[in-house]
Image (tube, rainbow, N blue to C red; front, side):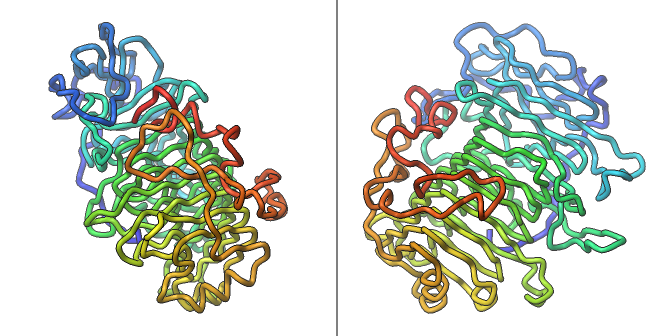
Length: 503
């Protein structure tokens, strides 16, 4: 994602009923009622595939739209408009679906003290172990300003958002873009807001027509913990896409921890403004960027793994792509992005061109990156780092205790700027030798390099004090996302990285 293009998604008819009234069969959207049984021929494994008997009915508030997985799972569809409280319960023989643009609440506007007239809040709670699937690129979950999503799994029973094909067992290691994704829209500041009275915000969330932003840095859009988002991402038009997880104007009162994006056809996670913080993130196989930030994000992210697939004809990917649009606004008055990053390991792809830089920074973004590791596959033509333009050089990002081990340290077009910025920091290594290793057992992702566990050379780097950079960071004695083979925070709740849990 290189630009902030505002388009409207496909016109999707919405269920205007409240949760209490959405239990009837009329809510079911066309195309969800006839599932077939699938071929089970995929090598990527299935999710939520039943082996017993489908439940005979659906909970109150859901539509019974048939069965799936050889008739072993009852499909209970969420209403397209969720008003009030709705809980998605874990129950035997049941799987859940979304169809079309599925909204939690209606847009309540900028000010939490003065919601828009006629607007209504929605609160969606998803219980641990639940699987929710979607069937096409126009199917996505949108949490509007003033509403919340509580999807809190556990380390052994994650919540899974995935595609119908995955449930049917027909996905492969290359499958992607089979449904839209999850979008949280909040009331925190972003670059397209006027933050002096009267506060106004313009712009809509990429891939949707939803408004976002406000002047509440601590706004809460809910909590996501121990969540997998698989085979998502959808290009509505060129440069206008849904990603696995989109965080737009999301505030620091929101929890995003232990979230995995797998095989998104666009970015793994994209953040537009806001103050949301992230911890323990795993992004595997995004076709575009791993973590993409834009329009004034000023939160922090600690402990993250990004591993990239080999490029194809459509991908132009970075592990990080950090921007500070709108670039048309002079830098001196631009509300620039100021992300804080600690303990990330980016494993870049084997690229035939220099267009897949592992860490890319442009349009005046001003990140602080500490205690992290950037690497890519031997023989890759892409560099580890690109300070991509004059505005970003002026903003002068900070790098401390960052270990880079790419064959090419800096993207050739930006060597001077990148060198100036990177060497100004402390404890940095521009041309190190990787001693990273992959998990010894349990791995089933064979199309991405999984060397993200520190070895001797990474361990030798002295970390800087992370809490001094961001109040939400914890102190570590190591750089990178994973200290050693005994550090297994990424296992158990993820797919493809844990024994018995294929994607």
